[in-house]
Length: 431
Ligand code: ADP
Ligand code: ASP
Ligand code: MG
Image (tube, rainbow, N blue to C red; front, side):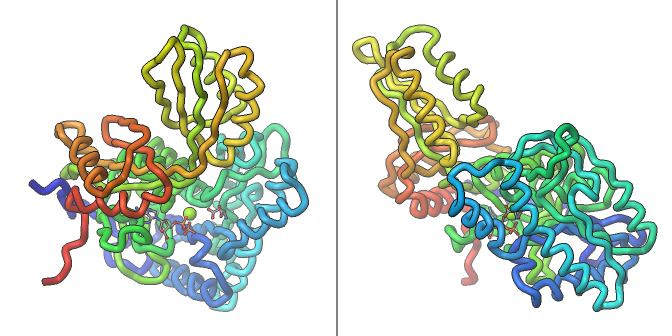
């Protein structure tokens, strides 16, 4: 039986030079870091925007920082301070996107188009005050609309906003330019939100890990949400959440080619694929609370304390107890590990556990597919593939459309490939 059914129906054409586009409507195009990595790439992006303008579109562009700029800025901050003040770190990081927006506006002028670059704050992106992971709470796009009415290309710095309460500049978390783009598409009633990146769509697995991975032509918000939440960083999780809540259609495509990408939409009238893909995440660690007394209230206390510190817990597993004690394990972002460990160590006398161990050498591999709801045996087939590949499973969790396992980080490549192959997701090779 074929686990994966390819779906071809219902493709929505995009704007960037693709046949079938409608004139006079707003399109939002987001260009990621690799798409604006140097000034030549910026000139190339300007050409693509000019093509959309020539088709009669009103174009709003969202840009990321050039190449690895955000990483470099973070490194510089860390050279100065282990825990830089959130306000200042956000001020620093948002400067990356300001560079690319201004350079891109200049490139548009060179091509004979007028462009207006706007910071997130100028573009009316209003957030809460939570530095480094701010949420968009409102959009007042007056200046964007004025720019469009004046015939300009409007270029917005991605990944940033301004806090309504503190009036400080905030950032939306790594990969947040995707969310800026989707939020603007929703606020402006855009026809489509195009996410331009360095791959030509969403694949059945990260093509860097599984070279045989196949591009998906269409995917539902629900499936993409599970893929993104499971580590497929081609779209930021929040951008997909936002798109689902506001009914925004996303077209993920490459800025390096003109080929069709992947359409992510509501997924109605879609032939349901059994399995859409395999995702992996090496950004989490496993925290183990050893030998906790097996009595009511302990888990509540531990996880309340972690929640109060805004530590995002992913999987939780409690072992069968032995001699009245048990181990509780959970996974959480690597960056939160030291803080969570310190907090729980300070609670050791209170909860009566023996020790806290934080293991950073783990990875999560997930299988995602809306069709698995109605098909038994998916988890069993996944575990068999892992066992045949000699990969040991340390933790398991499931949702209705996902099965995830925690394994050793060193096993991630063979694990992804084995599961990918087991479910027939490999590209058909020419015979
Ligand atoms: P950008 O800088 O354009 O935002 P990202 O690096 O954030 O780009 O996202 C694109 C990358 O996501 C790809 O280069 C690819 O390695 C990775 N990726 C992970 N999973 C997938 C997947 N299932 N399909 C496509 N790309 C994926
Ligand atoms: N420049 C930011 C980052 O690297 C935001 C983004 O690219 O979406 O995370
Ligand atoms: Mg990204």
